[in-house]
Length: 575
Image 1 (spheres, rainbow, N blue to C red):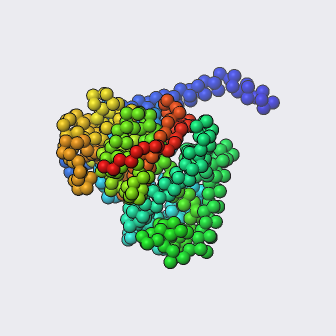
Image 2 (cartoon, rainbow, N blue to C red):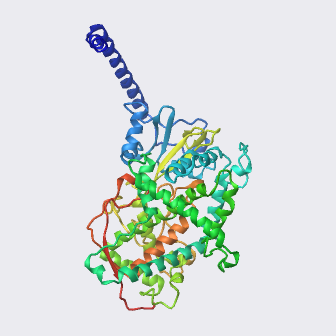
Image 3 (cartoon, one colour):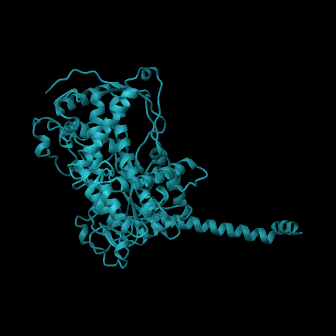
């Protein structure tokens, strides 16, 4: 009877007319709303800013990006292909711009993509890192227990020694301060030098061990490849799934790998506490054979004093620290090596430049310690190597950086209003591909292609340098001090003048990556050693990047990229 009744109801002309009328009304409302938003979006003056924007008394919200389906239209497009969506939403009339995007009811993201606005955001002292994003990462990416995540959500004290005035919780509820202080000391302060040297030593030791076992073995020439992967890289492969909240039953292996890492770290903590002896700390005052560094000791000393930070919680933080310290460094080094090794002329240039910088063509045979030769102060003088480093991060540094306005204060960013509590997104991938800003030598070197000389300035060539000559606001200047102590005045030099707001693979402002100096040191040392000490032949003609990882850091290959490798046999030339 019920089924018969429903069928009769559907066939009732009055009922059908009402349904169709409702559908038509809803459709008309959607069309009217879309056209209204579309009109406002296209009639907002985006580019003609007054010279003195700081004197503006009235600011306006960035234009709302139109969507056929309010709210969900942008959310679905962003989740499905965020690279394509962001390129479309942050470009207007061929120029980078700003926009608001409605993601879900009551929540909008502010897309800041033009260079001047990004520069202002990075300089504004009140712009911070959004706590919700950080808590999402430590919980979803690295398995932080919910009870500990809540401590981070409640921490509005800031990362400085003195908490913000609005902070009313006890001192043991300041995890952001503890985290920031430790990383600041270990990655930019007194721990930077020892950490750099320790990385170089470990890298060389690993290559020597691996080389004895594989690189020099006869089987390596027969195509018998050996694959090494550990749990960290399984977690790394799972990051795109974690970020999209893909459940465990669909991708179980990254979740299992993360659990194994967490348990392994907890076991290490117990072992280290039993075996650590302060008398075994290295002469540099930083390293030790158990905890490894003063940074690790600091984290173990301070985090247990923070609310809800037991070994389980600290292990999740260390999974994140391990991933953050490794993933992008390895990806950047790999991408740089791939581009260099795929071009024999460039490889020859790199080796010649490094031999001049290091004073030898055979690092291992040099009377100097390898770690001394690969000192960052020396490698920073190699203009070609530094240009390749900057170009790789421009071409492959595709990260989304999120910023937030204070909870109770609206911000004026140029002419734009950034309302209190709002979240903004800046995409380095979009900025790094701005064809109107970057120098392409009149189209000879497009922004989507690798050009090792993009960041080199030739004093004899006014068209050289990273910035499009038509966009250049300031003249280039040769770096002073040790970097140019031995070069000719006419020799090309590495320069990034004028790229502020356009090149930011590490973010910027108060939220800039604290590990950027260590990362650069590690990448340059690794590249220098690999190029000088090994012959490496890629076994693929081209390489596609994995689009699924867009916005999560440096590009990675979509498919396996096998290669042949052997120790170089070179005559040692002291220069």
